[in-house]
Image 1 (spheres, one colour):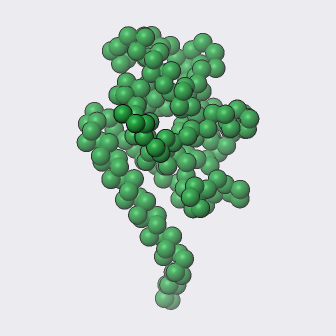
Image 2: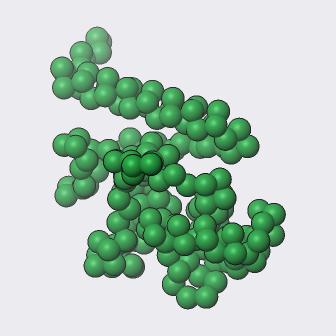
Length: 177
């Protein structure tokens, strides 16, 4: 039995997905070249979104992939990015990181003040925010695959009003030097 020839729309969607994967892959290669000590893992979720899913530019794109492709626009220092990566890697199922700034400082070989400053940048960009002493919420749009069950549970727990205030906004325009 002959396989069914994909429609023009299916081919266009496949071409778009391949192009996006190439773009993200080349972006990760550039990040790796600039930061050889940092490793990256991209986990793609090809499932179609549920009805009412957020779209970017008219096409469905997972927010986590869009953020990953544009993380360079935030001008994070190596320390700020390291703090974000450690917090993200160690979140619990609710997307929360439990730990002390002094422990992060020891891990990174820097002062607690440097870690505090890095966390301040993460808070100002909505990647993470302090809940109480030694407990931080990592933004579910960054911590989990967008549209995943963990992402949705975390957003439901945090609440729509808070998430609307904590939405990560990609700075597409660079500040003048």
